Image 1 (cartoon, rainbow, N blue to C red):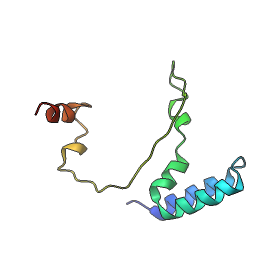
Image 2: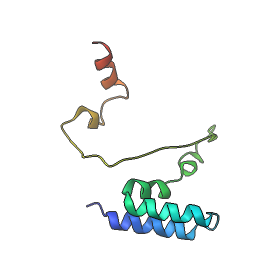
Image 3: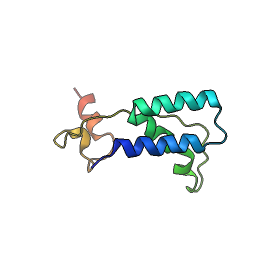
Image 4: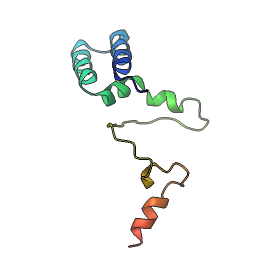
Length: 94
């Protein structure tokens, strides 16, 4: 079961412990995290950590956004067994 309060709390703790974050940015970050769980997730996931151990990869730039969505197990978009692009190819042939 998802726990938005735990996610928000973890993000707020992460922001509080960030000794390099300027105070002005800290206030903005805390407000954003309290208002939107996707912002909380963004403060907890470091793109560098995702690729640091992959040989031959050097992260030059990273940005991302997220938003809450309703899970629909019947939707083709949620079919994790399909290869990337299969859904797009079907719509492009029209």
